[in-house]
Image (tube, rainbow, N blue to C red; front, side, top):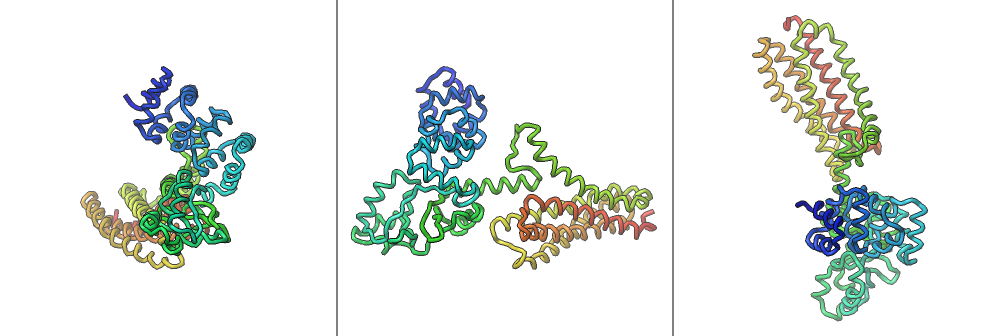
Length: 445
């Protein structure tokens, strides 16, 4: 029996002990996944049987849609109870889903210190360092001895997300370094924190985009990164688990947007919602398809005389589109990782042009030989060889420069590049192939 069925049976029988056993045997994220198929009535019944700590564990791991569904079934008092078991950044994310009235009500029911922390986090954009940071960290004065440091860690540690990294501040509370718990444990009691700290500590500002934060963490193999204000006073920290969520979110968003689909699109969405999100991009693609159609229409007289051209044309444009997509994927990934920009790396376009020349020659030669034996015409094979080389060069050229240019103009390369690339490979591919066919027309008849 699957987990969702076992949970449902326990809920229907109001078997609290069985629910606790299931929670003990499974990770909260697996429970949250199983609950995604529950109806509102079933969810409400489950929530009535769970303790606040168990609800908090599920909601922290649940997808946003399930979070909204569960929160909508709870009153403000119960929400405040399970908030006591959650980190401030997760609480801020959930409060951001609520209406202004309920948000104010819940904040008013919380401790003033906790409410102030949450309101600070709510002031930052959800996709910024401030929006994903947590305020549960350990920061100690540089002059403390190891004996005092360990006492503070024992006192503060249970309330924080991580204790492996201790941040060091001066008398003005400015961040001046960090210390590893291992080094603290290995040091003599009379050694000061300043003596063992690493003063080369990386930090980000609260307004820094979350994608940029993920690049820094990935580049320097960090487990945690502090968020500081203009005076270098630490405001919070971003942990590796949040960075992993950001990386997954950003990559998923880029993948969907490459196909002209909203990042919020999921299987099972309402048809009306999906139409609103997808149709505009299909209309844009339709407009670009008319450009390709217009190009083909310019050579109708040639196609009518040599019907074989109609069968060969899609090969040229299809291969151009595939080659361009390969280049596009590599470049967009490099942009996302901060490895390439148009100012310093435009010259690498010649690499892609060279690659297009080689790949076009090989695939064009194979296609030309096949068409030669199929239609018994040497010139048809020669035409598609030249057209294939030309279109794969064009694909490499535009596949490299289009996303870099869009990034330079502060446009998302993932959402727009494929449209321009497909237009370029289709229009130039058709034009090149049919122009060559018109030049060699006497040899094709």
